[in-house]
Image 1 (cartoon, rainbow, N blue to C red):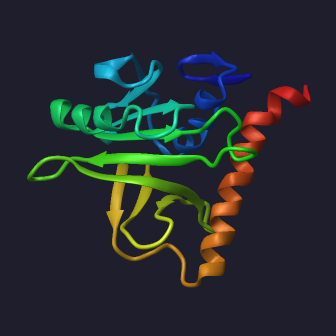
Image 2: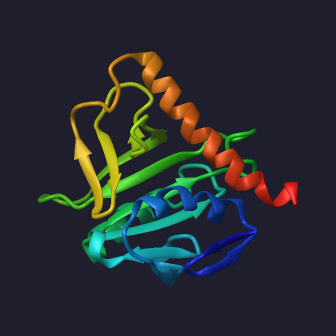
Length: 172
């Protein structure tokens, strides 16, 4: 059972949120179902970030991610876990970043655990890279890896952590 600042959860989608939660400096404020995001959304005021998780595949909640970003002026991260995170369903992340001309959205990102223990979101092929830091999301144009093998290793490290987070309850 996940013990977090918002209580305990057996929901695999909520359990996967432990990965980005550990990278942020503050305890979140539970938001419930804010403006159409999945129930259990969390707000990190000092990081200007709202995080939510869902077992639902795209396009469900896709427009809501961008809408919450535009309406509240916060970056939004939606973690899509499926019902069996990283065992039968790949975990992907959709984000909307606050931009000068409105939200900038990126979909289908994967978690990457860098060998220095930092946490990143990386595209499957070409695109920007997002570092998850204590003060929020940081858009980067330089990848956190040099070779494709390093990328694969980092994605596998993150997937391993996710599987351990989700299956920990079954082992007890």
